[in-house]
Image 1 (tube, rainbow, N blue to C red):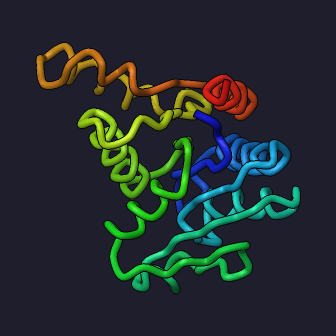
Image 2: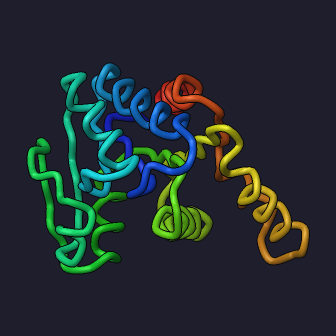
Image 3: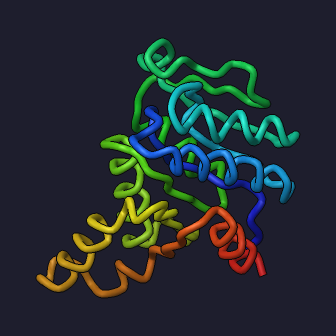
Length: 183
């Protein structure tokens, strides 16, 4: 598989720690520097806005997908290379994944969790084989990773579920893992 387009799931809020925005900024810039396209939720708020602005500032190709009902709430970023408006959240998630070769999940809330678990479920069901990376900035995702281990330990998922997630701690290690996936 060659990575040319990276879907980033992340918060529409900045979060409590400056490290979250720093990681989003570094990842957006690194995706652009690698010559890859950023695919994301098309918002101009929170970590979404940070990752997109960083990719744009570095000259990157940006592909945003936003449902009609979030245009105002997430401040649809219309100056992207490609700006797609969908009718539903489900359609948004499908368009984002279908236009990406890999997924990176930054800190985020319920929406990011929804996106992650849908793409993880689709991977478990064999509907795609794209790499799924968890960017665990400052240990943000530690409780989630413990929950995935618990689900497996309690017999509600095959151990392979955990193997579908690649956990990295920095944007640099995320880019290295994506580069390795391209080899």
